[in-house]
Length: 63
Image (cartoon, rainbow, N blue to C red; front, side, top):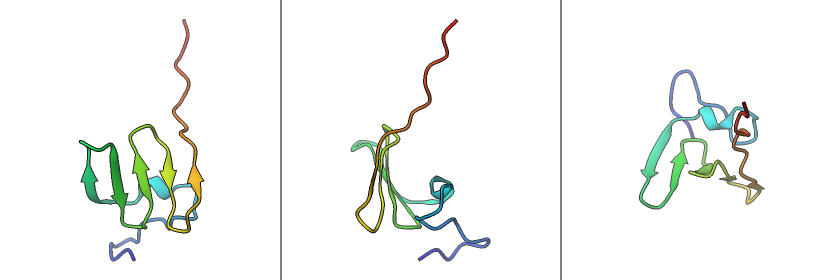
């Protein structure tokens, strides 16, 4: 699916979020990456094969 050089990471790789955004819909809270993954503002993901990745925001640092 990706035509970039170098190619973006595929949706099954851990670094899949590094793929380029091909469609952004910030008003709806999601972006489509060139590897077919949907990335949501809460850091959750929906992969092309239907798998759901739960939100994984970093924990806030406590002083």
